[in-house]
Length: 162
Image (cartoon, rainbow, N blue to C red):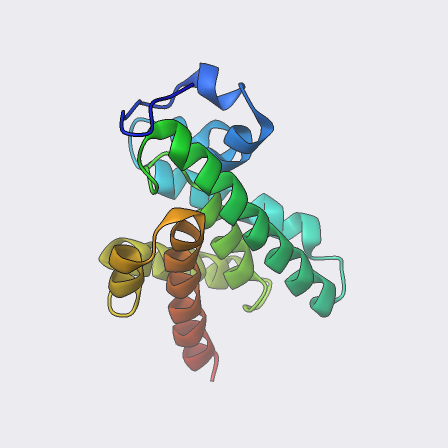
């Protein structure tokens, strides 16, 4: 049992110790030594490809369920690590990226634009992302700031499509 106030570094042992850790650590991409958020974001593509054949309403329902699952698994791993939004927790990036991909044309150029814009907003954190990142904690806070970054990327991508 991890002391609530201690901070540990995630590793392969933690990754495989519980299914929620496996998800929140992005199937291991969150353990990448450089840019784990970017590595995790790339997993949004296979998630998107897994749901793309569902009707649009069911795609969004699946993403909402995965967002809610993310609140739970990110909070669980955050408690184990002793910090709520550890850089190794990347489930939020995975779900957010898949959500963005649902909104753009099925071409590689739009996928690259979606990826770049999401990473830009996720790293830069303009308002209201920065506010949510600072003031809303726990699993919901982890998921929300990336949800907001996704919403901003979707907005820009929709404007670009017009």
